Length: 495
Ligand code: SF4
Image (cartoon, rainbow, N blue to C red; front, top):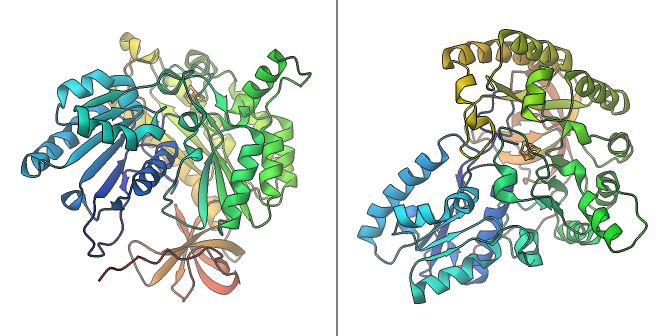
């Protein structure tokens, strides 16, 4: 959904390495560096799985890696500068270690393919978003024939290439998993490059998804997040295809049905999804959320703007009033629903009145948190062509500050309202900043810190909330209600 800088939500897009502690073995080691959204992180898990299936092991850092994969994202600001900066650094690494192999994948590779190969001849493989499944094969081919550039366009896909979930995987977290339910997007938001690089919406078969979740549950996974660019239109293309084949089926998404089916899988205690589109938030989805115990009480509903004229210029397909009506319908059916959003400030042509409308809608929506962004053009998008309507940067910064104040007010109020309550948290492990503290997430996706106790990550515990800040809660452990079910991965030692 065109994310970049989070303000108050803890679940921001990330850049991270897939790493494991060095265990002394001598074998090919890989490192995957991920830029971008959860979809990219999930693709990285698949790339890591493929390389491991090919006999490799994770490296501790770039210096110890034989293969480095950069999984790029063109939604982020300055994505190309960041990529070429990283490739420059890797060039000096490769000068010192000519055996180092470098691969560039992801949506920037899909878009800029030949340019990357030309500007960075030290890159061994360039591959796109639709041929993640060929990553290991392309690497082998580059050893025989030199640099490989292979980009598959949407529509030319084999099943395993279209849906990386069908590939081997190396998940970083054992108790929680992402499940890609759909790739691509049929919308045409003026600021977004996704449809151009990911292609039209293609949904995975319903039965395959349920089977995958059953398999995950059998492995001890208790929380799944359904991923897609526009998750709540899941299945519309399947219905279209079925109709073309002569079947009498309703031409409607099957997302609500999928929520119920996945939520009914034994062992799955939490179901989340991201990201839905407000125009596709149908009553049956709200009902399914309300009636399916495992579906968490959290709705991320991207607003983008509160001005109807800006929403029209963005091609979002809803008005502010319609958005607020749908939100009210969700809140009236789902008790204790946390709501988060994405908002762009300074979209081309945004006037003071447009921005005031955004402030009003943000206040009325009463968000738990928001990712707020200052608009920045993405080459290849419609809005990037509107240079004569770009908003002055200082004006956009000042607007952003005002928007943050509105969102932070409601965030703090929502968090403080939880003081004294007993929350179920899914334990994520020790806090990155303080090992004496454990962190976990509530069903509303709120981060809770509490004093460390001998609890495995992946366990469920009850915590009394004692304090609240802008982006997290603090609490005291009451009891563990369900210990982690997944097996712990034990590193294999060699003599
Ligand atoms: S709905 Fe599609 S086009 Fe619009 S922001 Fe999301 S991914 Fe981009």
